[in-house]
Length: 144
Image 1 (cartoon, rainbow, N blue to C red):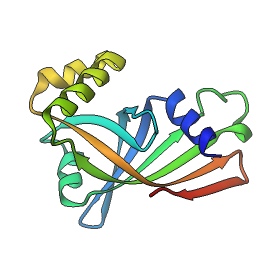
Image 2: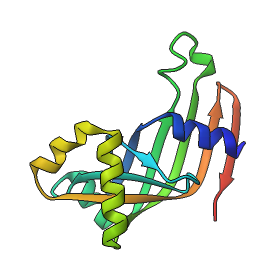
Image 3: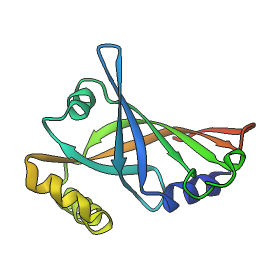
């Protein structure tokens, strides 16, 4: 089942990220890339955004990655992956630069962010995943 999850993460490059601040949820549509093991998902955002302020205040993150574009003709076959994770800044400058370059290569539209101001490149370290395959087949896994 973990291979199905890695495959879904790898086939997609956009997710919904939910953050929270003062008990108020906030959702953002985010472009992403993942590491080879699909243990970390990388994104970038402006440092003066609501999502970034939320992440700094509370590092709990939830992501939703799904197959709705692939399964547009049959909603009963859509796969939906809920990822529970933790926000982590990328402190190592070489690693940060590498992720930055990979993000811009895969998502050229993010160059607008780069031009707009102070940008943070960050990781979501995956703690657990729940895959809903169709309307009733569910799988949950905690990652260590």
